[in-house]
Amino acid sequence: MTPPPSTSHESTAVDATDATAALPSILDLSRDKLTATMLELGEKKFRADQLWRSIYHETAPSFDDMSTLSKPFRKSLGEKYSISSLEQAMFLTSADGTTSKALYKLHDGELIETVLMRYESDGHRRNRKTACISTQAGCALGCTFCATGQQGFRRNLTVGEIVAQVIEMQRIAHREDEVQMSEGKRTKGELQGVTNVVFMGMGEPLANYRNMMAAIKVLNDGQGLNIGARHITVSTVGLIPQILQLADEELQINLAISLHAPDNATRSQTMPINQRYPVEELIRACHKYADKTKRRIFFEYVLLKEQNDSIEQAQKLGRLLNGLHCHVNLIPVNPTKEGPFERTDLSAAKLFQGGLKQYGIPSTVRMEKGIDINAGCGQLRERAIDILGA
Ligand code: SF4
Image 1 (cartoon, helix red, strand yellow):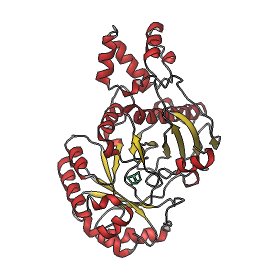
Image 2 (cartoon, protein in one colour):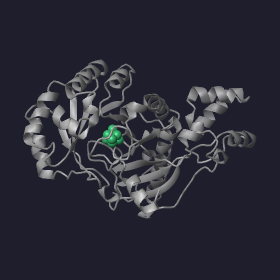
Image 3 (spheres, rainbow, N blue to C red):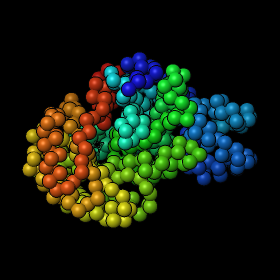
Image 4 (spheres, helix red, strand yellow):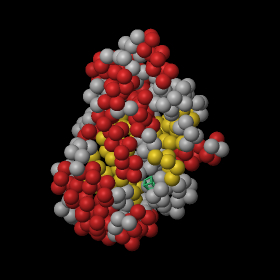
């Protein structure tokens, strides 16, 4: 894997792309709202389309950079709106160059994390770049293995704050594509930018449902970032009412459930939400979701040493998921500073996988990327508080 171009391994420089963060962000407007607003300002509809493309397709960092728009129009936009209120407070890239993690400061001082993961083509799947984005500052759900959960809930992110994270990752991905092209490692036709988005950063996406859905609509727009629905994954700890609501949206997105235990006693020890939505009810909701959407459900199972990684627990999980159209991702956990758990080693993870196979449940052992840069959810914010006193 070629390391990304600007691999100063660590940077704490603040790199605000827009100095007018006190103004409302234009990223908070849906496409319809943006068009209506431009018409109200006396502009033609095609100008609104040009503006949309400049923001989301070209990812212009400022209105001044939008050369397809007239100077007076750019000036008037700059007086009314900012583009992004994300201020980069820290940026780390893993030693192998596959993972970068940004810590962003929001206009009110809250800190959120965004990760870019780079995957080489493996024969089955082409190269891809996945942005892992946050939907809340902090999280109220208090999972004990999660650094974000240990920090508590701060607030929901706006639509613009969610989308801005993908735009930032897109700019990085495009810069890398251009460097590779100049080095002859890639042709123009192969330029790809961010190919996938996972809502697996800080916070519970379904607890910020309305803004998450509005953000998906923006990401999915073919004249903007153009992230296909099948390349978008929403991860939840299992908020049943919202899972059923999502089933009715008729979207082709992927749903991932953070399960992490095959029974209530074990799950409740690490995931307090299990007391509200027990495992059996959650799996019933998953059956309804799969029946309605005809989509396979992904289960995330963080392996915690001597907590949920025994062969008996693997078999119990196999029985629980039997008959459900699903795939299980087994993830040996990134240890957190305060968390009590250790990482399950690879051989134990493979044994667990064998237990699932007995029940015909497909699974993958997925080693977490970016362990050397605290890429686990909430870990960089935790580190920044140590380093910056933030
Ligand atoms: S794992 Fe997800 S839901 Fe649980 S505390 Fe962390 S961010 Fe919140």
